[in-house]
Image 1: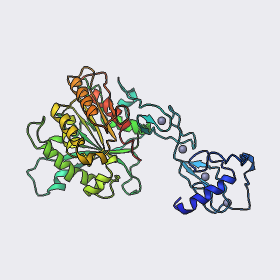
Image 2: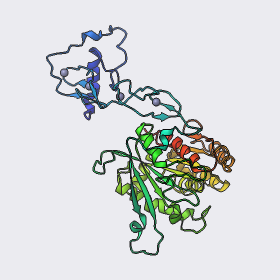
Image 3: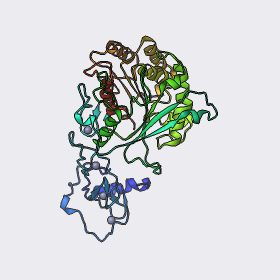
Image 4: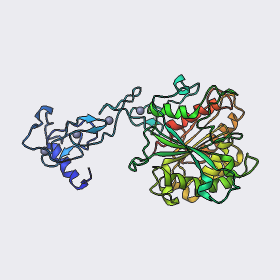
Length: 404
Ligand SMILES: [Zn+2]
Ligand SMILES: [Zn+2]
Ligand SMILES: [Zn+2]
Ligand SMILES: [Zn+2]
């Protein structure tokens, strides 16, 4: 796979022979017009060649195209990793290797099946309110000690970290997308993690059950989700619209470096440069007042570090203006928005606000295109956790999809 220099020669050789490879190979699709198309049965195998080495599924000695014998998405014969070029829209099974492959959306459609994102606009299926057969784990971290261990007076800067099932800290090769979750007024770090929301129309919504089920169903790539205590980071007694500069600074200098330094993220190291280079793999989800902070402290103030934004049930004129101003800055052209999704409950007092400002931002910014990297999806319900559980499900379907 690494010996690119031989790739072109091997491909040319494969042209004269047969390529049985149905996927993943780089073999030409058709022979030149003057050359009769080779018959599939003419593949000389077994041949005198033992096929000692394959590059991209083609034997470097004789040009034999590996017929591929897949096991777990890897060919037992040539070692090729299946890119899952097509899959069944419902079962998600790869047409090539038979393995489960999640939807991969780009420009609003799945590259593997053409489906549009299956947003939920009502109530999530019952399975999302119960434990999944496979469950992630939750760790608690105290950012206060990371920031200043001697500062005993500082408010506890707690965060909960969701690690997906199968996460192996020792496996540095495997990389994970990172979501920073910002709760709303009156909430804390448990709200978008392990708290079961029953009163006030929560209907038993528990976010970690949603994360577990989505990953069990392989609806998105595995992610690390960090639910922070927003109060402790804004350091203001009042919540709405205050302390966003404190939060923006702490996201940049405390939270993101800590996460990049302690978990297997796409950032090569905890430096700002490394996080910026991996911003396609960093996202924010905020709800209610947390949405205002995701827009102000995230989208407007840390646009270099986050490429994905989900903002539910909240958007004020100032936050929309700040985002539009940031996206109008000269360097914004090199900083793609990979995902911008907003939404609210259909009877949510913030519904109109949220959609109106989504439209303002989408209309003003060329890099934000409805149906491609930007979505506004309302959910049946009001300003409560059940709505936000469904909205978070919708966001996780389409975040982190447009990387190359
Ligand atoms: Zn060979
Ligand atoms: Zn093979
Ligand atoms: Zn496959
Ligand atoms: Zn698909």
